Image: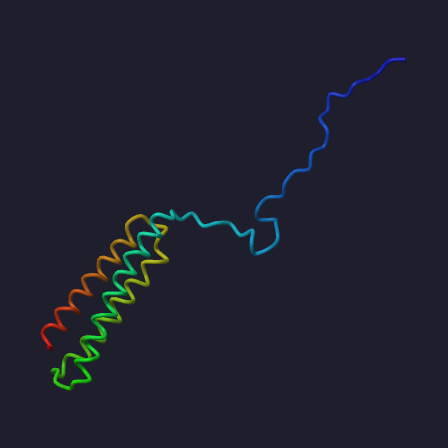
Length: 121
């Protein structure tokens, strides 16, 4: 009687590809560097806090009623453009330079709003 040995490896269950696994918790993670996203969030937070302060000053000026006629539409347009640029930076975090360009443009628009507020008071 002879003993035969098998050279085959035992069957090991293979994992399914990530796309085949079900469930929302197993979605593929986007290729975004977290440091870049944190930097964009920090810059946008600074813009938001400073914009809130300038917005409150603008509101007080408008309620006082002694601002020029051009002030209200100008400050609304600068606020919306600056906010739109800052918001547009978030989906662009995959690219390397686009969020920084958008946040820089938003900062320039914010500075224009500060200058307009200084001219109106």
